[in-house]
Image 1 (spheres, rainbow, N blue to C red):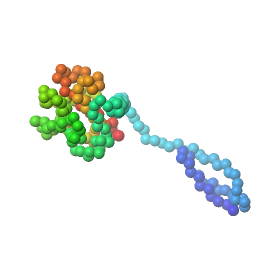
Image 2: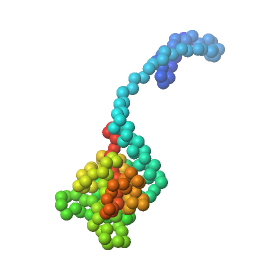
Image 3: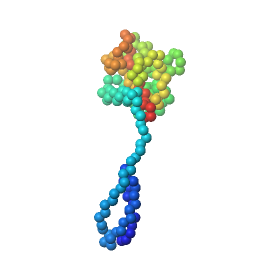
Image 4: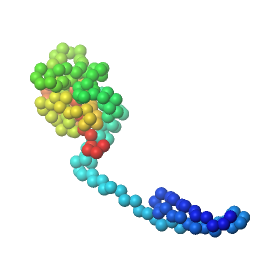
Length: 181
C-alpha cells in the first residue's frame, strides 16, 4: 500500500498526525500514543447566597412533586409569555387575580366559600423572606423561577405559616432565579 498519513483525534488528547508505512498485505498492528490535552474551563464561583437559593429551589421542586398547594414552575412561566406576573396566575382554578385600588399592580385572592375572606390579602414571601406592601407585578416574570400558592395554614409549609398573624388568608411564595441560569 505504501506510505500514508494517519490523523487521530480523541476528546481530551492533542490531535496528531502519524506517518505510517502500510505493508503490501494492507494489514498491520499499530500502537499510537497521544499527548493528553487539558481543557480549561471558565471558573464558576458559587457564593453562600447562591448556594442557599439553589437549596431553597430544590425544596420548592420537592414540595411541588408532593402537592398540597398550587405550583407554577419556570416552564409554565415561559409558556405563558406574560409581561406581568399576575398574568401568569390568571386561569388557575381557586385563584382570583384582582386589580389593586392604588397603583397599577395586581394581587391574588384565594377563592373561598367564606365571604369574610373575600378581601383578605395573602402573606407574600420572596426567596424565603416575608415582604410587606408587595404587589405581585413588582417582579417581572423573567426573574421568577417558581411560585407556590397555599390557601390556608393547613396546607402551607410550617416555615411560611409561622408569624402569619391571626388573619391568615393564605401564602404566596415566590422564588427568583439564580443569577446566570
